[in-house]
Amino acid sequence: MRVLKFPRRLIRKLETPDLPLEALEAIRRLRRYLDELEAAAILKARELGASSADIGEALGITRQAVYNRLRTLEQRAETDPEFVIPDLDTEEIPDLETTSTETKLDAR
Image (cartoon, helix red, strand yellow):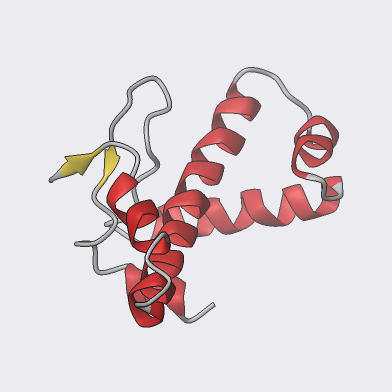
């Protein structure tokens, strides 16, 4: 599995206003990156004892929405063999550009 640090190259694509399609593709990939990072942070917060209300407050959502996200994460972990949560203890994350789950996430 390839790994990469924060996708700075995607940020650089956003800074090129004369290439809007590349910027839109970079936005899509950054959303995916942030979704995976959020999932890791939610799971780590739960592991460290944060309540759903605490997590919801940090995200600006209700605790019920946190429960729904946790349930979705559990379902993904059970059904998608390629589902990987980034390890927040390192600076590396899975290369989100090469996984086959990208199309599943794009369908949301």
